[in-house]
Length: 261
Ligand SMILES: Nc1ncnc2c1ncn2[C@@H]1O[C@H](COP(=O)(O)OP(=O)(O)OP(=O)(O)O)[C@@H](O)[C@H]1O
Image 1: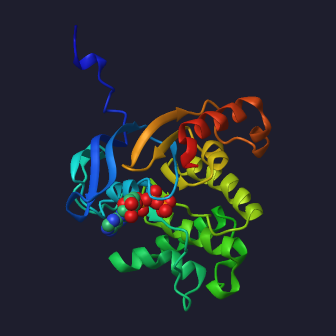
Image 2: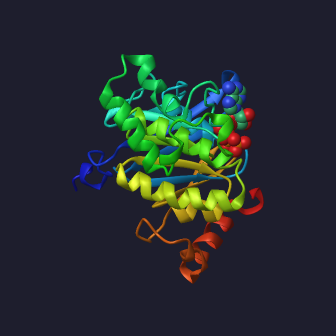
């Protein structure tokens, strides 16, 4: 038997991990243990699990912000050793600069690395249109709602040209209604820019609604307990959440999380 043929193919993987682990405090805290997966180009992965199960740790490892303790991790086939320009992160707080307009905030990462061109300005305006802010290009953060500020942060992330997006509870601080709308738009946008996306959430239905695959994580030590495939095409309507198939998946994930959720 050809042993290699039974291994998962790495060639079609944007983010790949084999036995990935991270401890803190000289091994006292096992934040992530033995994570193995391959994430396909353009796919959407949700990480769901209770507080402290290693979701943010996994994203920070992929972003190259922290060093792994064990195992291997590749992005676009290259071992992760440092922060990379093809991977970008977004957090619960937009962290916009108050004294800069929306378009100036979107241009900030470019400005930090080189001189801004007319083309960059055009691209920034286009991205703000894509996230639904065409009438707010010159608005300051104080003139924008929380949801609008997160839209600017998403445009800023896309402006960097990163094609692996790591979103750490990006809409977690927003009200339910705004969050649902942004989820629908996020699904459209990541498809349009063909990004590969990892999305952290505590919300099981949100995790399933958005994703092709849900990494269900459990704490102590942080592990990927199961990777659940979501069989619906993307983008998909909010109404899918009322289907029996969707609710079967919710029950399956809840079952894996058990008492932890
Ligand atoms: N810099 C650090 N130093 C020490 N321990 C850390 C550090 N970062 C994370 N940890 C620990 O690692 C574990 C996993 O943390 P992590 O932030 O990845 O969890 P999480 O699933 O993202 O949690 P939450 O949902 O609350 O954000 C926790 O026990 C946490 O206390």
